[in-house]
Structure formats: structure tokens, C-alpha cells
Amino acid sequence: MSLYKRLHEANNDDLPASAGLETGRVNPALEELRHRVHSALIEELGPILYDQRMGEDELRKKVHEALHAAIAMERTPLAAADKAQLIQDVSDDILGYGPIDKLLRDDDISEIMCNGPKSIYVERDGKLELDEVTFIDENHLRRIIDKIVAQIGRRIDESSPLCDARLPDGSRVNAVIAPLAVGGPFLTIRKFKADPLRIDDLIRFGTLSVHSARFLQACIVGKLNVIVSGGTGTGKTTMLNVLSSFIPSDERIITVEDAKELQLAQDHVLSMETRPPNVEGKGEVTIRDLVKNTLRMRPDRIVVGECRSGEALDMLQAMNTGHDGSLTTLHANTPRDSLSRLETLVLMSGFDLPVRAIREQTASAVDMIVQLQRLRDGSRRITHITEVSGMEGEVITLQDVFLFDFTAGVDESGRFKGSLKPTGVRPKFAQKLADHGIRLGPEMFSPTQGEPVQEQGRGRR
Image (cartoon, rainbow, N blue to C red; front, side, top):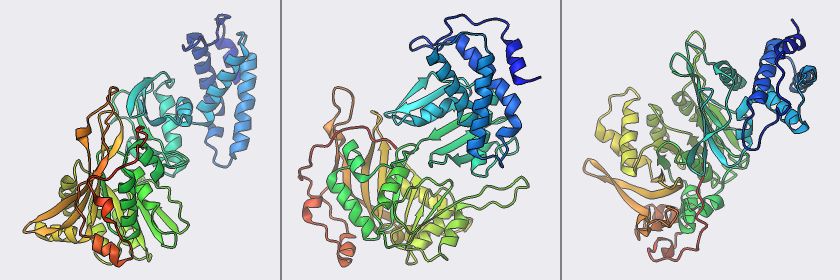
């Protein structure tokens, strides 16, 4: 039975003449029409939609022809605005990412969380809120997930129900399906802007101060090994991207990530991402495999998106064997915790190393830790810039160079008024930077320095 005949028969019960959208509300009748047209188009055009040989323009033309013909067969009177919205919605469903297309286009949204087909939350200005958009059913959401992961050559099915992927713009995607996801497939998208945030943006948001920004730039140019530490959603990848922007353009940079997210502006950048195992459980390429391989590619800088397992040992060895200026991130709540976690990750490499040997390796390799935190007001701030100064007995010694001033309190709207300020401690690696021609003036570390007034916006990832 043709698409148009099915639609005609399904339309025996006429929709009311006022089938348009009411202001700020979704009209159930128009929503039902959208669902019916969408389902019919999927059934009619299904094989075409997944034909890799068909170009995007040709596919779009066929979908629009079928869509306009289907709507023309409808006996329901539709206002021009409602008809245009219906065409847009169904086109997004078929050709794009369905209902979340408009959320992906909204620059104010930094994260999209689909907790099943009927519950979609978004993050705006660091705060979560329930959005009115929904998927038709679980199958609809599953089709969108399949489309996303297929674009980068990955798969998600019952044998492999978890998947990390990315959108073409670099936005990070995580998907979970049955039998692990109870209540429908789960889809989480952390959006990245087409125009990535730069150091000036972070200063304007209050993530860091002018003096601390100059200090971080000097550290990166001076080829210090830096770890960016923080919890989930604190802005580690954004900070890593900003720090990487300080790397001189005449250096060879190699990035290693699970899914490509870093957006480096330099010309000489080689980006590598992991590969999951195939259907037979073979062919997996891990971050550790890639980190080992980078050492054979003559890198000036190695940037690892995140250390989460045994690759931490390879990263430390790279930092200790002439690959200065390496950068990575890891999950931890404080600079001290980040060293403990790094120690644990090294032990996950499978080598039975003495704890003291690991700590000596860490103290020798890592120069500085940048700690990020998402505060109660939703803003992301650097709370510590900490030097790894060496060993005392069995303990790695740390000293804070910059600290966030929590004593400044909050304003009437609950926003933190503090900023990142120097502690007055001059780091030991300042001499190493001076040897490379980078001199840090005493005013940079003065606790009484005057900071320009910054716009206290909320830093977004």
C-alpha cells in the first residue's frame, strides 16, 4: 500500500480546523499528524534512508518530494505557519537528528540529556531544565542513536549496548540502549561551539583572572608538563583546548582521544582517536596503543584527551623522556586527589611497580596541576593552579601558586564574587622558564595585585 493511501485511510477522523499550534503549547492534533506522517515516511523510504551510495542532496530532494505529496493528500486545513513547522519537524526527524535538531542549533544549550523518548533535559547557564521536545517512541530515539554512531563507523547493539561517539562538529555523544538502559535508550550530548572558547572568553566568564591567564600561557610556551584535573562537566576539555592554543605554531602536535573533541588552530596537528572492537571482539585500538605509537611519530607535544587507565604510565614515561610540554586531563576533585588517582591509573597498567617508584616518576614528570570545579551557581572556575615541587620522603610535595577566593562570598543572585588570586608563592619552575627566556615578573605573584573588573558571566564548557 502506498504512503499516500495509508495516510488517506488513517485520516478518516478529521482533525479540527484549529489544528495550529497555540502560543507556547503543543497542539495534540497537530502532533498526532506529525507522528503519522513521520511513521509513514520511515516505512516508505526506509531502505533509501540508509543507502550510503545516495548523496545527501539527492536524499533530501526525495524526502521533501514525498513529504509535500503526503501533506497535500491531507484533508485537514492547516495554517501556513503550521504547515511550515510540520515540514520542518518531519524533515528534521528524517534527515537530521529529530527533535533534538533545534536543541543542537541553540547556542545557549551546552548539554542535551535524553532520558528515554519522552524526557529530555538540557543545560543552560550551568542549570538543568526539562525541555518540551520529545521523540515519538523508543524506536524513534534508537534510529537517531544508530544514525549518530554509524556516521563515525561505530556500532551499538545488544552485544555492545554502550557507545562513545561524536557529531560532525565535535560534540561528544554517549549512548546506552537495552538491556542496560531501563526505560528507553539514553542519549547524552555535550555540545561544542563551532567557534571554540578562547582565553579571553574564560577571563570574561570569570573562570580565571588576567594574571593567571598570562601565567598559564608562559607555562605552556615554556614546555611544562600540565595536568588539567576536575570532575565531570567542569570544563576540562575546554581548558585543555585553550591551553593547547598557546603551543607555538612551529611545533608538531599529536592529539590522542577516545572521540575527537579538541579543536586546535595550529596547522601541524595530527589527531588520532581510538577504535572499539568489531563484532568478533577484535581490532580494538586503545588510548594506550595510540600513546605508545605517538612516541614513534616525532612529536614536539603530546596532548591526551583523558587518562583513565594504564595509558597514564605511558604518558608519564613520555613526559620523562624528552617530550616536555605534554598535556592531559583526568578526573579528580583536588590537586592532591589527582596525584592519588594518577598513581591508581599507573597501577592499572598491569605492572607491579613500587608505590615510591610511581611517585618519583610522577614528581619528576608533572610540573603543574590546573584544578577546575563547577560551583553551586553553575559557573566553571579554576580553583587551584598548583606546582608539583618534588618529593619529601614518601610524599609528593605541592604548593599552590593561585587559589580561588571563596571568602569573597556570593551576591544577591547567589553567584560567587571571588576570583582566582596569587598566593604569593613563586614556583620553583620559574627558573626553568627563565632559562628558556620566559621571565615572570614579581607582580604576577603579588597577593595584593589589582585585577581589572571582569564580567562575572557563567563559564560554559
